[in-house]
Amino acid sequence: MAQLEGYYFSAALSCTFLVSCLLFSAFSRALREPYMDEIFHLPQAQRYCEGHFSLSQWDPMITTLPGLYLVSVGVVKPAIWIFGWSEHVVCSIGMLRFVNLLFSVGNFYLLYVLFRKVQPRNKAASSIQRVLSTLTLAVFPTLYFFNFLYYTEAGSMFFTLFAYLMCLYGNHKTSAFLGFCGFMFRQTNIIWAVFCAGNVIARKLTEAWKTELQKKEDRLPPIKGPFAEFRKILQFLLAYSMSFKNLSMLLLLTWPYILLGFLFCAFVVVNGGIVIGDRSSHEACLHFPQLFYFVSFTLFFSFPHLLSPSKIKTFLSLVWKRRILFFVVTLVSVFLVWKFTYAHKYLLADNRHYTFYVWKRVFQRYETVKYLLVPAYVFAGWSIADSLKSKSIFWNLMFFICLFIVVVPQKLLEFRYFILPYVIYRLNIPLPPTSRLICELSCYAVVNFITFFIFLNKTFQWPNSQDIQRFMW
Image (tube, helix red, strand yellow):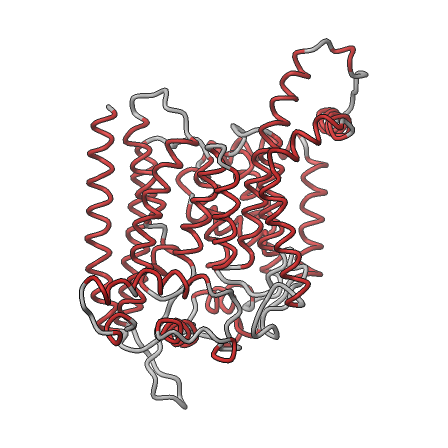
């Protein structure tokens, strides 16, 4: 089975890379000039490629750190000495975009290794399931699309997944260093370095909790009531955190991440904030509905695993049994939608993004729509949490805290911001049956075909501009 799995993996990776190369060729023919955010990224990378690293050469409209440009130069520059290519060719738009295609190959491999590490290997059928899961996530539409443009998504994903993998293998110094590399691609990736530290803490808490449960019940006073389990866990956490031995052990395990956290804090102090460059369009706020948009996004792309008649029946039965709890959750969600819904100026003005049409045709059509969707948000949130019940309560706590910190401060609704938390989520749910994976992969293939076809063929122009515009994520 191990040898067969190797053949499956090699075939999946080879076929994906071949299709990606064909698509890359189509993109290169259609897009001779920088498009969208590439108008900032590509010229900056070319300046680095030419050896101009001075801060005076920095484009103030760029809001991320120069990780993408530094890695790109490190990848393409050796081609001058190895192949004898001119600097004009090496620093061309096509070569710089190709760096992301190389990152996509690395992401494919990392996803596969992560599935082997995260998922148990106690079933014969899991070999094909792991390869199918890897292939599915590798062509996840919002991630796959940006492999062909000079954006930070592919590199950001690569270093974050690599850091997560090293964390799972217990190599925390390497994990923290890779987390720093991910931070250099996008500042919010520091949260996923925190998640890696949280993973270590969650594992130790789970071990201690299991030991505690095996002890006699008289160690903890009996607790009764509707939130008995929650209060028991809270009591355990308080007792655990009061132990100097426990805290020192966690400190010794997570010190590389703590050091990275101090470096991040120093950066924020020196920089005067998280965002560099143009801060006017990237203001932090408490945009709680971003959580609802994320769970909707996750439900849409993972519907074979999260949406079924049995799931809906179980949910409705649970709502009936705990109707007061769900009523309170729904009421709080309605309040958050009412008081904390924001519409960024880019969302309202830029008709090249799909989110523009989602907002215009769903949320802006009727004022009540955003409230009527709340029950769907509650179901999606419950279904996601239910799919993670195989993970420990402490792992779930760490994941949802990191998810909250990553998505809620973002004022702009953009699907790109959901890619990393979605991939981390999808890696950690139990391996679905092969039939559901095939269904998921087929849907991704259809979505990719439609988005690529529209992007490459359905162009349009703005009234006061001669530039060709295209629809994209």
